[in-house]
Length: 237
Image (cartoon, rainbow, N blue to C red; front, side, top):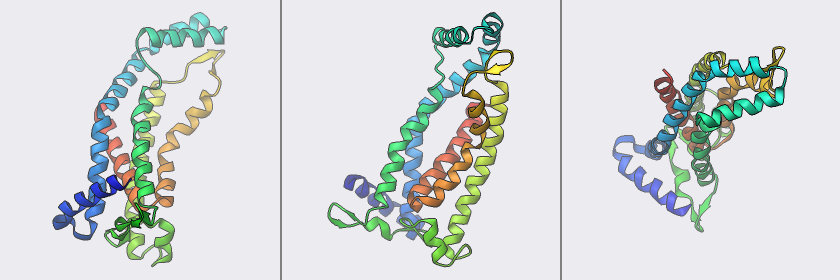
């Protein structure tokens, strides 16, 4: 972790002439962009997989007619179809899963007062007036919602809300186009009904994450979520 801390410090030093006291925050944004570039090939593969799954819907409809009274055989036939067409239902999860280590690295980096037995100098950096190691509750205790740090969080919440609304609408459209496969008499496969109801709201959970993690980790989440929204708008158009 100390190696990563040194890299962030060095990058912040390079950006300092442009971003001054917010140089470390800018370094985190660049780090996030670098991580997203690394997983972009997987995101493109996930987009191709989604389009392929959409194209499979007519074949799945035929399987539904053929095995509608045999739920287990229908599920097996659908899985066999995905295997034959080399379409993975889980491909879309990989880009998000591969970002988890980067998020937790930043979380721990800006949660520890010491690194390698020395004071964590990164905690002295800020995003405008909000310390990168503080949380929203700290901002509320230091000036309230309309204090300097509170306004920084207000800006982040506004961005996350806009992205969440965009993702909500996009997810609703995609799920309508890829409706779950009924197994018999209009019933859905077990468990898919609950997933269908919850999934469009998943993006709004990002608001909770931003509120409870250190600002540095929150900045990673906001940047990554915004990147994802733009990326998906391009790849899934």
